[in-house]
Structure formats: structure tokens, C-alpha cells
Length: 155
Image (cartoon, rainbow, N blue to C red; front, side, top):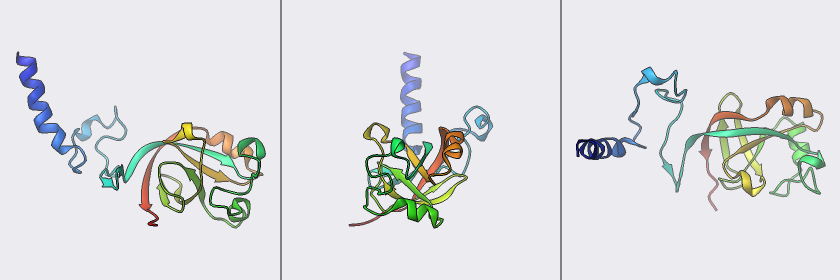
């Protein structure tokens, strides 16, 4: 009975705080949970999704057919990603936002979503790198980073 009452109290007090911007966990647990007690992760609804979240981030090489499809330089928006990446554009692929959306990736900066990923990676962001940076993409590996939706495309 005491556990049930305690559970109800926790639910009543904690759930309204989730998503409100008020930290639920004290900053003393930030060593255990790296995201706890930081101001970098801001949650709040933008449409039906969160505007910032810790996501899996990987890298791929535009122009490498084994990593893309039968048109390795052409992204989902129909533009030449090889040319854009060679010109210094920061391009990425993601399925959880509309094409053309600007994302801000922790320790990487802003990138424009101009490509899509395999549907099984609906939660990931894939950073586009040049064809000659295969080693760099492999070394990047799979990382957990804060990804913020900076600007959504409205159609």
C-alpha cells in the first residue's frame, strides 16, 4: 500500500515536469547520466516531435555506391550532394524531419537534411562526407550526440 501511494505521488509530481524545461534529475547525477543537469538538451514539442534529443549519429560518403544507391551523388531532394559537399556544404540524411530542414548537431554544427536513410534508421542522423573521406567516416563510427531541429521546412 505504501509503495502504491509513493508511486502515485511520484507520478503526480514528476510527469508534469517532463518536457517543461525544469530539470527532473539533480545535476549531481550528471556523471551517471551525461545528459542530466545540462542545459544543452532542450526538450519541447515542435510539431509532434521533440526539438532536441540525444540521437545516434553516423557518417557516410556521398559518391560511394556501396554506401548509397544506384545514383550515389544524387540525394533524396534530387540535388548533386557530391558537388555540395565538395563546395563545403554540411549535408546530412535523416528520416525524422522533412527534407530541407536544418539540424544542429553537437560538436559538428548545422547541417541541411537533403537525403534519406534506410527506413530502419528512423532515429539516426547520417553526416555526408566526401568520397575521398571513407577512412574519416569509418573512424567517426556511431556516436551519441545532441541533435536539435533548428529550422523546419513548411510546405
